Length: 420
Image (tube, rainbow, N blue to C red; front, side, top):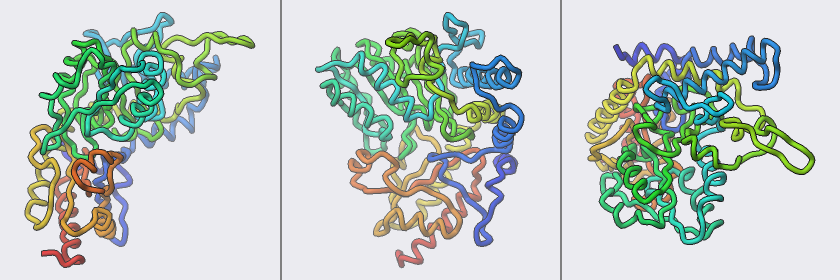
């Protein structure tokens, strides 16, 4: 039984208070809080398992390496990067080939932009993204287009903040080299029809990348079913540690890509004037990685799987519906993507005559944590005619009581700014 009140007890930070007011944390699209099992896994690593990986033959090194590589298997299974036997693809050296650890979604996308993009995109080619993209899935492609003389094109959105897939016939052509889209908008919470976009891109031989930073924490993901070439997500948005990301890439593509960073464990042979690269996935993991973070990702994954990703998804959607219904009761409020058909647990809104930062500041005084700003999606804000929105985003430990507390705090905005 999915019970958010019981789940909340597993998160120590949610027991904190400010000025006698309990923490109401509704900024989960930015980062999630961490359950006790993840915190203990980090502590356990540094207390009893700390050693570098892939180097030593002593017991601690073997334990650390085992933790590191077993998490790679957990990540592969979590996003469906496995076959019918629940096994991933392996390199010729016997290592899991298609799961690369990075510092986050941003680094994962940059890795693809440099390692794949610089060798495959040329002058006259086109890269297709959407108007919904986070800067991390926009700026790397802007820069790639500048370096290579390619053209950046955009999938438009409708009044509900959903992608207009009927425009794909005009946008995707033989010139399309890459299609890169987010699975869930971090600013609006709308869900992208990724499978349809990937299918259309494949018809012209385009490579596809999915920004799964918001999707992986909130809904079931199966990259084999999506058939995308790359899928990127971050641990810190799904109960795990900061500074850790995962890049899935199809083996046949990764094998042809040159490394993004050089040195450390990504080499096989080095002489004074030349080097050869390690096998997958290690050729993309230069230097000592975030081993403690990797060790803590498996318990985060296990926690979510125990809850059930369908349950996680439905719970966030229910809270979003409830929050929209409560906010609708207030005057002079605009809720973005209010009537979207496909959405997750995010609500963006503005109150007429009050800047979003002022809204967030008033809520902060009530110990209600929300985000205000452009949410690293400035082109989307420009399209909406706004400089910023206030955003509530929900996760597994949030309850309807949290929503009620947030709405009561929003009502204080009306009192302070004398809005009726």
